[in-house]
Image (cartoon, rainbow, N blue to C red; front, side):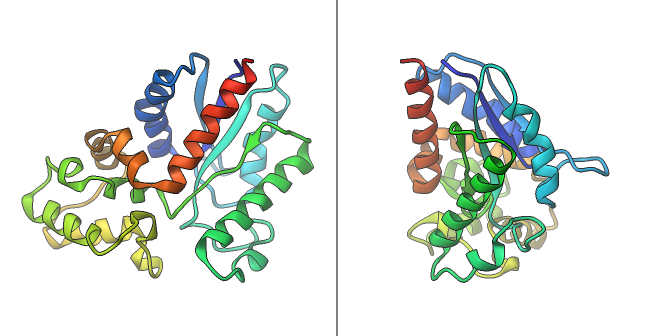
Length: 230
């Protein structure tokens, strides 16, 4: 079975992979090396703010002799320019959010294959961002928070049939909504500490159940990994 590398934006996503995804994939029979790789920015730190940084991060992986399966966990919410995503201006003309994301994933695939032809690259862009996943089961995920915060998150979730649709404007992205609710009760939402704890309390199974697009990505990873061992 091939190894799996998941290129992520930063520490939060890396911890999510280590604490939730790797155990889940192991339970599905993927007993191999699975590792998150944080995108490194040229000035230091991590994040997806320039496609060049992404390219510099993924390039060494494409030349590993064992040819691992490589995928990504990148937020759609932060993609807002050609500097971040080649073909961005074309992609945002698509009629709906799903087609825009698919267009960007194809652009990411083309960018990678321009570096090196790589059949085992699986582009994945989260709809809309990591915090989307935290709405999967807020009754449990936010159980350690103040009751007012938990109740507001539950009420917000109830407004959407699919939590992957939670968005309206840059101020309406899931993370911004969570931050605003916390702020109302004089608390600060910390993506790394709070976000991962909430995700763990929520549980990966609930997240997969509530997020069809995210679930489809995990299914594709599992099928690709199992196929590589046959």
